[in-house]
Length: 460
Image (cartoon, rainbow, N blue to C red; front, side, top):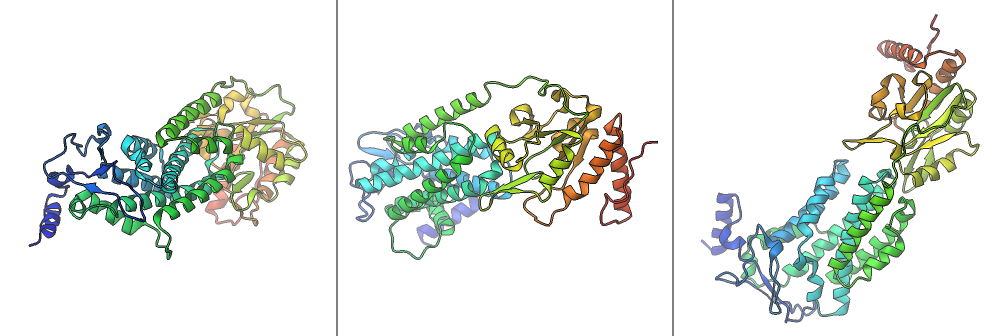
């Protein structure tokens, strides 16, 4: 049996990497020229162990000296896996905060962050550095958006595309390293694992361009996409000018440190002043109608921009005759004001409340109506997410989530019911809503196509 077959058999039997091989990680000589076209990078593997050994479980302390550079291939594999996991979770709509945290921990390896230094040509050095900087910038921006008062759906499609390019660039960089491994080093379990990863996940492009050219090309696309979404990002330090600044940093490590500083400053700025209740001044109408914004009144997507739900302007005009209209959104102030200014041509919305007015709770943002400064017997809230008004469910009407259907009739169906409630001058709107919900359930049991038909709210 050949040595390679014996090695693979042992891995299958043990189920874990063979320690004899996993600790034999390659050295990259800093003294050798590294230009990918010449393939002159020399990667060596010690037979007897290294003078400064790198254990696969704690390579962050890997030493660096003028003669040799220790590269932990396992750590490189873990970084790729975390970046891939973030993309997968974003696509599936899963929580990615823990994955991002793991990514920062795994990628905080000085040697991996300094891979650009081992390329002799300036073109190659800059391409690799910029690629690693943009990868970190994408994750930093995503971290900010996830924790900020911003509707991520506004920029998520573009951000996912940017991260896909970042992932491909990492695969191309890994391939650059693998192409220059000696045959002996290639027996390392992590080298084999990385090789398989690249083969399965790298985009299959019919091109004769080398990896460095592709990395540079992908990075330019990423920069263009990031600059396109920045106008929609709430006020923070993440501006096009700042992006150019971090790209001008002399090392990836300096750029990452700068990003983390600006991230902390942005959070401090956002949460510096938390409003204290009551949020609203004295009421201007007998009743208050609180409306959600995204997926209730409007929907934003990158291709079409801001879309208005059919009938929303007519709905606002009719409701304003009887209700004091308040928009209460979990979005940022910048985005919400931009969207409301487009929606509300006639200035019918009297007050605007934002994510900073909500109560964060396990990834959701609760709208506590007690904080409005209104008699809750005179308040109705309309939202497409029931959890948002979970503290006052008796005041709520849940409306269908809207994402662009131009045949939607939700406001045409809801408007006569809310007008009937207002004109009936109920002393407690919650009793009217309780009656409404009971009749809707009855109509649903009867199989009526329109559950809001034949509704009678007389409380006599």
